[in-house]
Image (tube, rainbow, N blue to C red; front, top):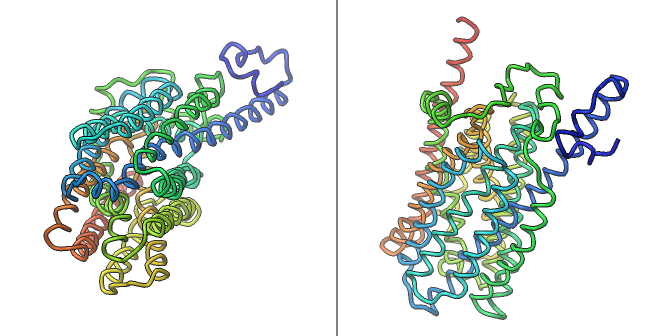
Length: 451
């Protein structure tokens, strides 16, 4: 029996009397593992492509500043408008995605993001640039909720953190591709090519994504992850029933202090993450004397090490901390504060040392950022995983909205060193909320044990 035999509920529901029970179980397990692997790499490919038609704006920003005559604050407004729309859209998309097909949802989002990138490349005024970039935020917000929904349905809590980290690395894979490829396009064909050519590539990949991707196991007639892993069946939460908006808000979101602590921590952490994401090429060129290509390479290092940091953080939380995501976040953020202060204290002009610091910062920023999203999906419960992750993302991108206009204003008034100090303060506050979340988790454990 081939894996494709389970691509529809009708074929998957073949009577067990036609096959010995042990053989049927082996066939089902083989099919489940096939589709899980296929969906995993489809999600990586899809979300990598989302970033190719997203971070191209950051790559083109320094050239747009000079060619179009805009200030850092004006470009910052474009970053902020995107972040606000994206953050709100991510929560709304999460609520919708929990009640629909992750496959169609993700493909539609990538198609829309591709068209928006194409329109940005054909625009001339700051108004149109900001408008199309904000519209891109709407479609970009449809990218990650399907990932959150599928991951909690195809992977159990015992290995979710590790595989979440692997998929989360698609952020950095896409960033590396556009930082290097976009810098090359910028030098040879100008900033508009950084939007137009990636848009064409994303349109092609959206077709591949539609062919490869599927929805949750039950939609294909396969057993739930709880049945496959021999876990408590009650943890499936009656997946056959569609969760309502009222249930999502009143049962899974609002009365959930652990989720809200993670949201607040993510708000401040995203100021740091998106501050580097948005401003790293400009900062490296203006404050540290990097060339256009070198700033792209150094920013690539930040993203590349971020991928490793996310995978490492997920692996550590699974294997050594028994799923305690908050504890790993505290370790990462405390180290991040130290490195940020060193980066501020040493006004480096050395290319090698700047690159080294960017590598370390990326590793430490993306570790807790990845875990915050994973924890948001877990705390939101399986039935509302995309909504819980979306709420975490909403708070994160409210912070990201500030990192656009706010960081631009801070740099215009006080300079780049003030930005690094501000990032240190935000990291310290984020660490405090992760510690509060840990206290809440211990309190829940004591209640469950009757102590």
